[in-house]
Length: 197
Image 1: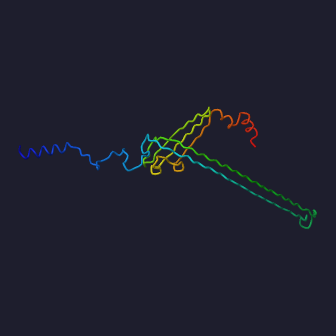
Image 2: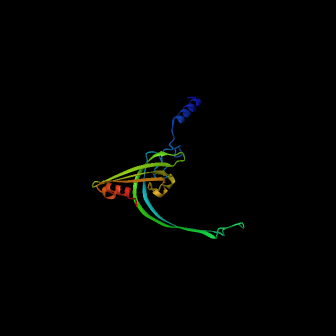
């Protein structure tokens, strides 16, 4: 067999082989072997630890005072011909306003919920959304959450604290047996409308 034919066979065989090198190009949708298994694409899930504390302490105080005094004296003489006598007019007024208002509100909510990545923004941030429904003895609690998460803020165990979730929305609804005890009744609503103070 001539040498040139052997060379052609070797070249053809080499082109048909696929090397299993560790430096082969990886699919960008595959997770890197040295990274944590955290949410990165649509459909992935992660857990949000909700720790929301809200405290409002608002105080307002105002004092206004106004005092006006005016007097007019007239001697009653017009030239050298007429003497109308002397008389005077004086007036005074006082106006004052004093007001004070205070408002305090403190709330705390701690829970956890698993959410799903529903979209990926152009800069790589994840748009997440989740709903959890609990039914315990007829008491139904529905928690709805949504927000925007940076991948770098997700912990190695695929969790994130709610304070790192941008545009974080949480809605908590209570239904069932206990809802009647925490909502205002129809008579109370009417009285509040007629007598709001």
